[in-house]
Length: 277
Image (cartoon, rainbow, N blue to C red; front, side, top):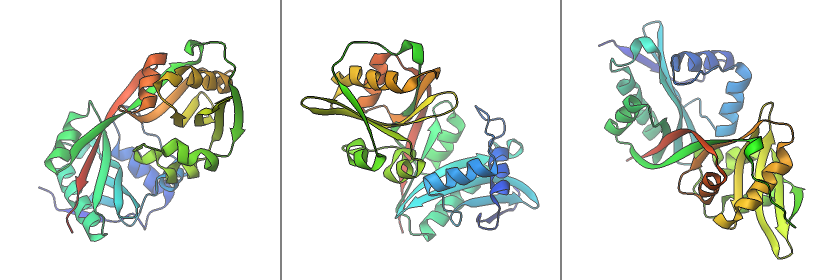
């Protein structure tokens, strides 16, 4: 087996990091096309720690990168990829062993990650390294023309994201990219739906070039599907579809999305490992 060498990512520019990430995920299930700007935003939004990120080489040949984000004593593998030429040859096992070693040295008490359900080889690697599946998180999509319509006396008001953040996160265990730190940095527009008895829902979203991206939603219960649909119709305008990213499949919103006819675009296993110091 090759004698792999490892470094952190502190000495690399954003352009280099983006290109290494692109190479690590070459021939992946969907194209990864980072630019210096997109990788910089990704690192900022998710608290990627370049000092705990593992870059792997075989001599002068780049092999892969394990990008690690940290929040306090918690860690998240923000991207784990091996270039195609080294897949299935033990490189992934070596890089994960190094990732766990670095995480322990950094004082982290646990790591989590997500892996696409169809990526059985990677899931097996993570399981063999000590990770276990906690739950599934799902990407959902609905065409704007399919959003149900109904009459309502509800009132919509805009507000600041900070004003609804506690409500958005109450009682939830969001995926890493949906936690408070990510949502506040990502930004977006905040909308509240109310009736005479008080607010019944809130939504944090962003209008992007080809879609409405829903970041987080608060609903009283699953009977609030009409309220969610009303908010979506209000914001979608001329955009073709709505997308919800990494929604836990045990949440109220997931049930509501199913009721409204959202299509499941992908499913990921959220996996965790506790680290002994």
